[in-house]
Length: 205
Image 1 (cartoon, rainbow, N blue to C red):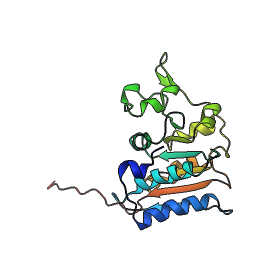
Image 2: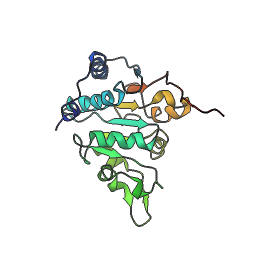
Image 3: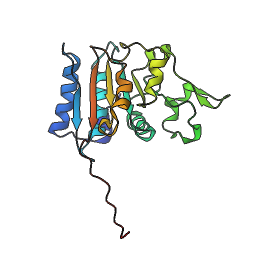
Image 4: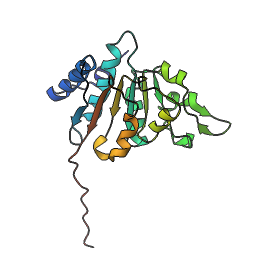
């Protein structure tokens, strides 16, 4: 399968490459601790996260690596699916949606990754079964929707890696929702910008 780096001609800088290598090394370390990726807008956090995911999956021929990627909003989750779609097919990547999201609002590139969960008769997206999750290598959802995974009985050992996108923007309780699926053996990666610039408002009033 074609890698994200080759597909986009993205050349990681020294810091980005170090992130990818260190997360891969942390996976095999006996002691686990959260890995933080900090960077301002446009510094390549999303590209780095995509490469981390693909590196983890490519270097595990046993296919025991299973990644949960949680994002703050649907737009970010959909973007990750679109970026990774050329490298991962619907048999490996699942986009888990809120039950009552309108099907027409799902981008066409994302639809193949969630159509197995769509109940056309009731016009809603079902929660995945444990069997469906076990077949996947990557599950993408929002912070809030990851609570459903816990509710359907997912074990803490199901995901070997839990990655949180834009973790600096989330309130602590929201960030903890996907992290409740972690145990002592889970590798956790938090990405975000804790020094975001406030919006500039230019108005005489």
